[in-house]
Figure 1 (cartoon, one colour):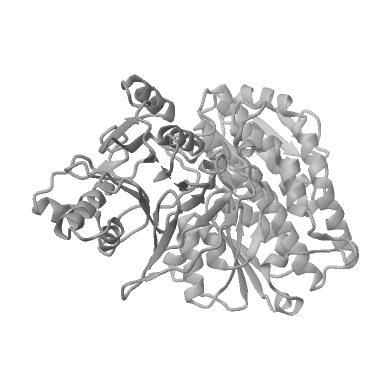
Figure 2: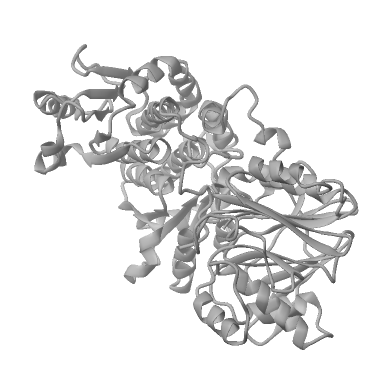
Length: 618
């Protein structure tokens, strides 16, 4: 994995490919490459490093930009098989340099396929699983001269086990690309006399808003003026029906930095508007409840839910923990969150009266998608909570909650996480009002939700003050994040943010557990961030701070409560909200704290090392 772009049409393909790869940089990668057909030859250029390095290399190649190739593919790679270098970068070709392949995902039987190919005399240039596909497709074309490129790709894929999103280029068929998907996203873009393909719509919106999301098992052949799709089935293949394009609700400007130096900071500051979008049309003031028509459950079906389980990975999992707390508090039914990466491997007991919520910003997270499929196999009731229309999880679930966060480019999730929590508050309110949550308390939560955008804006206004605190502690090698009950998932998310973009080791602990082991690590160079909501546990949280201070540990307090001045070494205050909603606000200073610490340390904030935005491999 990680980013794919392809083009066939009349315009110069190379600028389209490079621009598309630039738009996909946010997904995380370690090398980049392109392949075009020019004057009957397959021309490959690739390099370790960034898209700018690739652009520089192309500029240095005499005539490369003057070839005016009208078909090509490009890729940014996040290493899975083989170290990140030029040889292992995509595209990969067969021995005769006829076929070029770009591929996201992992071919699980790659070693077996490589062994079979080597036994037949094929020499491999790279350590990747993808190169095997290029050799296999070329072999299929060699043994059957009447086979189309699509035939060769389908026959190859029948021997493949694993996940793939791939695009195939053949210099003997210079008017077409063959595209396939199984577990890794691929989207077609329909233009006027031209066609595009990408792993994410962000690479397409500059050129078209009409897209078609391929389904798992689908293969498409695209030409400048038309396309067709075929579905690989167990018994053979079947032609797919004509697909109605989806109109993308995004503009090229949504992916521009504007006044900001990087996307993470931009997206942090977009949160007030993102929250407003999430609530637009969903607050029912007359009945003091929420409207979530997308979940497709009436009042009787909502009342029959006996438990709610959130499934997500990383920040989506922590947002699920916040959602579980909201459901228990407002609806008074059992709720929990679980890492989707573990769910299907532990042979879960699936209760038909449990509502499962699959949470993913991209809607393509493979662990979460596999969890959804496991639930459906076992008759579970599952809805999606995703930020991308047409994504795999959204389609697999069939109904759910659209997050309305807008495009999120930075690898570290900020506005999508906040909108997850806001949407889960809406779900909890809805579940509560069909049960025993009073109209007065429903009205209180509705008003509290309406206040959130202005309260988030008030926190963002303290950006520079928070930066000063972050700069003071950025050089620490380790940090603790401490929280109780409502503050616990906030602490976990805060630790996640700091470690993923600043590379500072951070651990989150429940405050009551601090004295059962972790307290041994407290010392003057180990700062602790303590989360203190305005609830009935303020005194206990103050006691936690005193325990840390007594052992020489610096404390940063994040709070809406009236704690004594000077209790902590640094205090970040947030507006007081309805108690159930305060975790949403408490997250915002932690985002800024992590951002400014990473900036102080000179990190590549939008593209942290070893990470990708959309994780479509296990």
